Image (cartoon, rainbow, N blue to C red; front, side):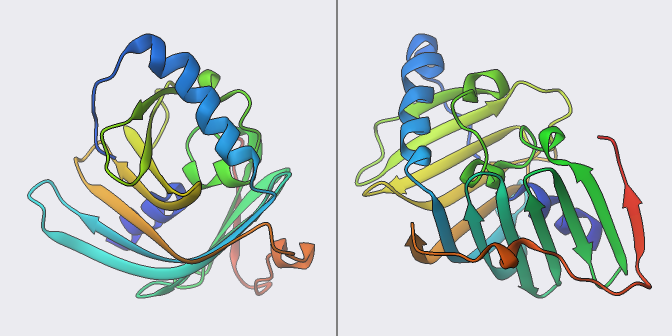
Amino acid sequence: MKTFMGRVSAVLAVLLISTSPAWADAQAAKALAGKLEKYRTYQADFIQVVVDGTGSKVQETRGNLKAKRPGLFFWESKSPFSQTIVADGKKVEVYDPDLEQVTIKPMEKQMSSTPALLLSGQVDNLEEAYDVSRDEETAGADDFILKPRSQDSLFLSLRLRFRDDVLTEMRLRDSLDQISVLSFQDVKVNQPVDNSVFHLDYPDSVDVIKSAQ
């Protein structure tokens, strides 16, 4: 379970729906990029709930995240399992204290498989990594659905929900038909975030695993 939750946290947090392909690829991607590009910084607390194919809750996780363009990202889950993810624009480091392990991967390899990096990475090329569609039927919200083009992605689909142009929720569906719902609270947009936040400290005794993928 810990391994699965680590993967879910690393990719973060969707329900599949059908829309017009033309609207999906062009206008929806442009509209989503326009919303995300407005975020120079994004900070929030989160509650992440994972449910299985029957709708039963598998796990609930709480933590906080910070993102800053270009390329800076911080994620920390505190309960029930501790995990820290930091991106510095060139690499992504995932620290699991319980496993005494740090995994380091090139950032460019993670953009299509780690949805949360949309908050800090380039978004003008969304169509290269995702099929993007827009759900205009959601009352009071603006929803976008992303389906990864890469066969190596750890998720099948992702739903981003905006209210008044503020990202309030991400929903992710994986290949096991499990859904991760990430709800953002106390959201702060475009407030100062010091770059020192995006530096990961960990004991010298942990195992460091470097991956090219």
